Image 1 (cartoon, chains in turn purple, red):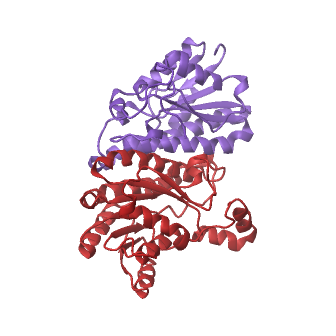
Image 2 (cartoon, rainbow over the protein chains, first blue to last red; image 1 turned 45 degrees about the vertical axis):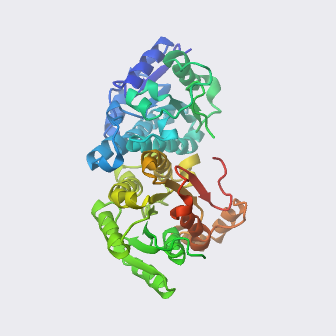
Length: 219
Length: 254
């Protein structure tokens, strides 16, 4: 599906990021990864510079360290920042680095990947939920600003089970998947992401696709 | 207005003008004791207006980026009214309506947005938790269509407004076992920034009004205020995690 396509995957050191990088590689992409989030714009630019070509940026919006359950009232300012605001800054720097690469070429694809728990809410995970929904909104604005430059920005939401076991315990309210099985990382999630790298995906931007077998459904 | 909020005490941040001022006036008119939180002295004028109408209010110097000032606001509420029933976090950065390109923004502009909207919400929730738990009180936040469908002019504003919906929904689940609702309102009402824009170019107001099914931009006190009064009242105790657009039908895409 992705033969000849170059994909950059962020947060490759996480369970989700590492899994997606491997899965996108199995689908034929040449994959470059960055291990962790970016603390500033220069770091994002430097990481992107290591990739000779990039057709698609897959930004994993969460970090494993952000997925620690804790009541907000007990969350100290350093933890609030690390699990919440730092992920939003990371997304801004990643989007900026992607824009720098894509704008001169007049084309580019960005997919933001996050667990559905930001969308549904998850007790004990307020900072990371704040970040996920903020990044998803940021992606829509980026889609509006960069659409004229041939850059699309979409979001793919995946089940908590593909992200962190801790998140599963906080989202037991979710209905079972309508299709009777949970999604496969490669054949369902990575394949959906791959569609955004195809030439026929240019008309979709600012969208959120939930790839969880029909457990969470958007209103 | 009936005294829906009689005996209840409510903190409103960013209450010096615009939507915050309207919310403070409406809550006071509904019988609440209102703690008017403002960064600047303009909060005194709002307290004066409430006093003049026979309501109860007190001003507190409140910079939501500084948790200590929220703690002080909560203490003032407990001292004046003996209990706290709601916090309305309405404050946004003064730079909220400054147009920008996402590829150009720097850390400083982001920090302005995040410090007031997001860290402010965190500070309100943390500082208010114990007092609100005592009364099964509520936290009310403010969002915008920019946070739900993006915006071509203000991506950072859209990001914090979207982020606040994530915050509200997760905190609603977290606080639900305590009987404490958390909700978020998407208002469309005349803010000082919008007022200035319309003053400079009357066409702005007309164009905006044309996009509102009800044909006009709302009034902070009389259009948005009553929705906050409802959510801050005991009547709304079973409503949580919701986004309520109070905007004449402007945004219906949820």
